Image (cartoon, rainbow, N blue to C red; front, side, top):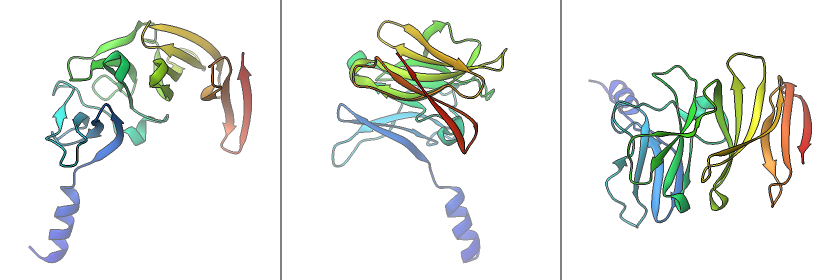
Length: 194
């Protein structure tokens, strides 16, 4: 092999380490260490540890850059869980699932209440076990913004719009949430929920 092929081969064999989150002395991240994207954790001490897979090998995650939203998972240390967006065999209909911090089989985070939607995570407040999601309807031309309490499984509908309804920020006590609609990238309207 010549130097060009060696450089190309090296580039193609590079591993991905995406969307890192530090919680409780552990580093959580998405990687393709096992040949497909999955969720991993390792110690965050100076010399680290061997990355541990947290999902069964039959479950592959989508590249977080392609999902949209702010992040593909959130570590909820107080609950001992991780909320992660998973689709079914690459159908890109992401649903929120809960996995124990040490790994295991995912369980639906909010039961079947989001089954008719494609979900994206737009904000997380792990200290309060709250997440903000945008859910695109699979049957209507609407997106619905929700605030989810992961500890109780409660979902609060914040608003709906055919132009986005993206929950992009909340005040300190979460009594008001800014929802962003946009028909085009340069034409946004800001709404407040009370």
